[in-house]
Figure 1 (cartoon, rainbow, N blue to C red):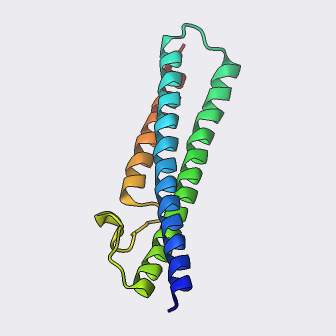
Figure 2 (cartoon, rainbow, N blue to C red):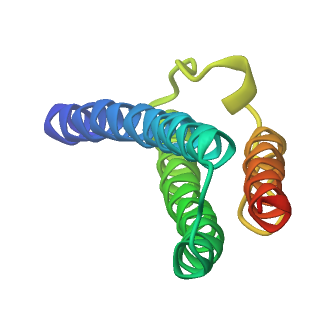
Figure 3 (tube, rainbow, N blue to C red):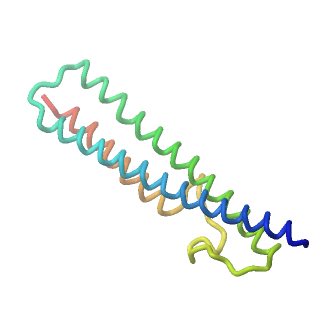
Length: 141
């Protein structure tokens, strides 16, 4: 390989590395902010003395929809991370360089339905909170 190609590959490698880190941070931010928002909503439902039927229906539809949209966003971000890491591995082989990927990423990322084990843990936590809000709404007089 000539020097110019090496330089382009190194630039691409660094760009992919930044993109993978950004996508991973996006997953964490989406989860954290959605959990915070849903916890505030749960607090409001618990503290409220009188919730109208219309408001119950609106919350009952909006909360699961928000949960589904957050999961879709997380999956999209995870796919971005996987693609970046796979391209980084290809460049590492071409340039014959040591990996800068963390231990978790140095081997292929295993996903089930587009999510890692850590993603599934976050999805379960999100689902539990959504179900708690729905149950609390149903029990609220």
